[in-house]
Amino acid sequence: QVQLVESGGGLVQPGGSLRLSCAASETIFSFYAMGWYRQAPGKQRVLVARITSGGSTNYADSVKGRVTISRDNAKNTVDLQMNSLKPEDTAVYFCNANRLYRGSPYEYWGQGTQVTVSS
Image (cartoon, rainbow, N blue to C red; front, side, top):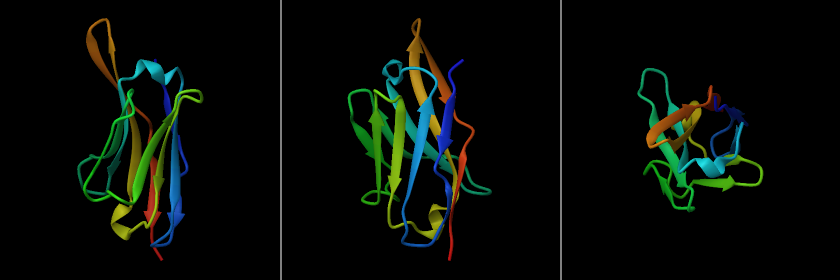
């Protein structure tokens, strides 16, 4: 069973930065896409950023220009650098990974890490 473990969340003031990291229990070469999602209280979980095995990225409009996703294949990690944080970025952030296994798609989630942006 694949495990994804997030770290790096916390409390930060508006305008501050945080770097979230997601460590996978096995090589991330097996995942055709990995990403970060977030879920604010009372709202649906939504995509923040996504990166493919080829390095292509896409971002939610709400974070474009402020967030960068990257993957380190040697460390089996996917990081999310978040700058110029706003109160509306407050949410639980989840790591996500997708792969094909014997022709079937599989999706995995981490347990989430809380990000709170407040003065």
